[in-house]
Image 1 (cartoon, rainbow over the protein chains, first blue to last red):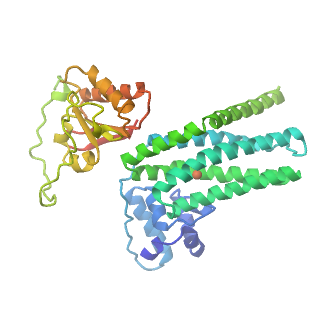
Image 2: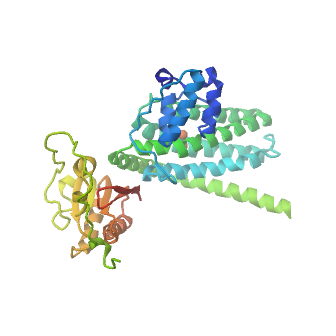
Image 3: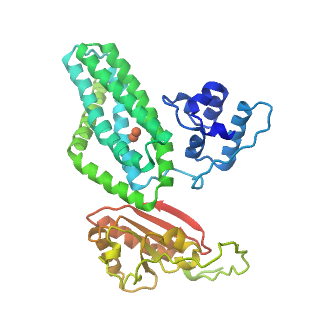
Length: 267
Length: 154
Ligand SMILES: [Fe+2]
Ligand SMILES: [Fe+2]
C-alpha cells in the first residue's frame, strides 16, 4: 500500500478506475480534476477526514488495488487534528477568500454575457474585452500573483498540490489568450467555448482552494507566518488599490446591466 | 447550587490521573525578556519590535502544562489579570502602541474559560480595532484543567 501513497492520483485512477468512484463517495473530487498530479497521501492528508473515515477510505482503496488480500492501512501522518464545523480562515487567507467572492461574481455572469453574443458587434466586443480585462488584472495579476509570488512560496514550489494549482492558473491563462484571439478574428463560437471553459475551470479551482487547500495551509502555518503573509498581502493590496476598486466597480455595473436587462425583458 | 462568580468557584481534581512520561531532564524556559507584567513593560521595548506578541491572562501558565514549549516559544510576552488589575485603560493604550509603534507581527491572547477572563480579550480587540495599523489577532481559551477549548483568528 505504501508505494501507492507516493503516486499521482490520476495514475492510480487510470489503473484502478474504481478508486475514483470511492474518492467521489468521500466527496474528494479528484476524478474531475484537470491536473491530477497530487499524491494519494497528500490528498488524504489535505482533506483532513476524521480518522475513522480516513481508515474506511484507505481500506476500500487498498481492497481495489490488492483484491483478496487483507491490506494493512497506513495512517497518514498529519500535524494537526481534524477540524469540525464551519471553516474559519486566518486573516490573510480570509482576504483571498474575499477576492474569490469578487471573481465568482464575474463567473456567475458569464452564461448571461454569452447569451446571444456576436463579437462582430462592437458593443459585444467591448463587453467581452471588459470581462477579459477584469480576469487579467484582478483575478490574475492581483489575486493569482498573491498566491504564486507569496502564498505558494511559503509551502515550496515542488509540492504536488501547489504544482497542480499553478497548472490550473496556466490553463486559465491559455483560455483567456484564446478568447482574445477569437475576439480579434471575430469568432464568436470560440469566444463562447473558451470563456465557458474558463468559468468552469475557475469555479472548481476556487472551490478547491476555499474548501481544501486554504484550510490545510492554515493548519500548517505558524503564527509568525500568518503575520508575514498578512503584511505582504497588505503591501500587494496597496499596490493594486486602484485596480481592485476599478474592477469591483466594473463587476457592479455589469451586474446592474444584466439585472436591468432582465427586468426590462420581463416587463 | 453554586451561585457566585464562576471564576472563583472551587474545583478539586487531585484524583485526576496525570501522565508522568514527559522526557527526562529540566524543561527549558522559553521566556526571552523581563519584565512581563503589562503595567511594568514598555510597549516599545526592543523585544516587542516586529514580534509575535503573546498576551496571557495570569492563570493560564499554571493551568497549561505545555505553556512554555507550545505557546511562549518564539514570542514576546505580557501578562495581566482582567479581573483584579487596576488601571486597565493603560492596557488599552499599551496594546494599541504595540500595533502602531512597535509594529508587532501578530497578537495572540490567551485567556481562561471563566467569564471574567474575556475582559482581556475585549480590551485587546478594541485596541486592535482602533489602531491605525492592522495585524492578525488570535485568541486561545484554556480550560481549568489545561485543555484547549477554543483557538481562533479574529
Ligand atoms: Fe489559485
Ligand atoms: Fe485563488
